[in-house]
Length: 617
Image (cartoon, rainbow, N blue to C red; front, top):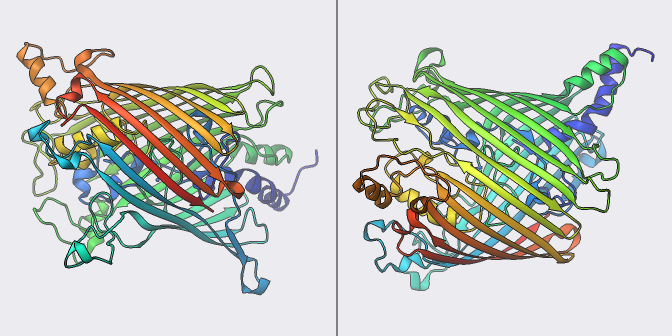
């Protein structure tokens, strides 16, 4: 084959590699609807409060990231709809308008969605745990809340699918705002006509929030991103942007963002093009990212009430107080593994993060391995079998976490002793999918810790929730453990709480989804869960074991006093309009708490009925 010149090679790569593959890695929006039967690989780069933005850097600098989303890097993802995640419609065009009279190849585009959710329930845990099972009317809530999300972008370039440059933005509208005047803006609730902007956490939020804004620059050998962006990858248990409708049970409510510079490319494509002139895309994707997490504008954080310094970016010389991370991302994404079925896929990725803060001697490694494999072994008309999973770990040490007796922050913002971390978590999904049904068996694990505050010699933090925007069921994690851990760790770091994610447990979660007619789905699930470690969230069970003379706080699967309980869920989902622009879902769940959890709740049986209406454009 005739060798290409360097200039011809760059032009060929720009015209083949970028449109064909770069979009797989840097698709701006996982909220763009996707079908459940045609996995795509959108990437975003996560939602929620990250450790990097929660305030005092020294208290949040390690074991890594008090929000797992903060550990994320942008990475492609194949939707888990085939593994019991809600199927979504094919991408709609949104709003796309050429501007400047066509004299320049500039276009304005916008996609987004708006949803409202109504929640009612019985037996929800509250902060009144000191009088467990005492009458408390607030355990029977009924409320509604909303969230809008729009993604305007301006692109420059004659190729619509792969512009030369794109300015991407993401706005949240009335972000999780509860219906009504919950800030008591009116003199009396009886005559109020002015609803407030109070969200589901009781915080007043602005009606419009610019969450993310970044530039995408496509170059002949890949893509560069610069700015504030989100991230999503794998199954979403480590880094999760919280956008869209990935969850079958409930809605994601957070919105993490990262200030970063990212470069993505396909190294095998470049090597083959240089060697043979063949510029066809190859499956290997490589990305390198650097994140600026905290410049420590509040100083060292060691003062009781730190204030902003007059020169906030030089509190310590040479950036010793800054929190930064470098990320290496590798992914093998192959969509042509089965000539008989185009939706079959092989997707394996690995994320490596190194996070540091010099002042607190923080050195943290975050690793993440995920895979999604789908294949129809018996031909095009037979069900596809799939095997999905993700395993994550946080390993490191820091003198910035004041946990345990004697672990206080000194004048330099450090603790006397080093706290180490060995956090582990993972999810595995096995199942089969046909034209009108999906069956999935899911198992998951999030490591617990029984000795966070009591040790005087071994300072460790091994407990970390899986990302709160990865939902398992309606009640066990989103309601029962979220409320229980909020009470147990109210005075400590918020990162120790569940906040609705899988926390300190082992679980089994079979699900089945059946399409009655196009646009009408029935979905059922059953959850069994056990605690991994008995700790502050289960004081009654801990006291019972200690009274019996046992010091063992670790739990085995099927141990009765470690049983968190069972949960059964049922949902009816309806969609209609072009590209399923309208979506309505009604979800019902009931839970009975087990030995570890029942004694800590006002009542052991909990149920909820929720309904959501949404428009996706």
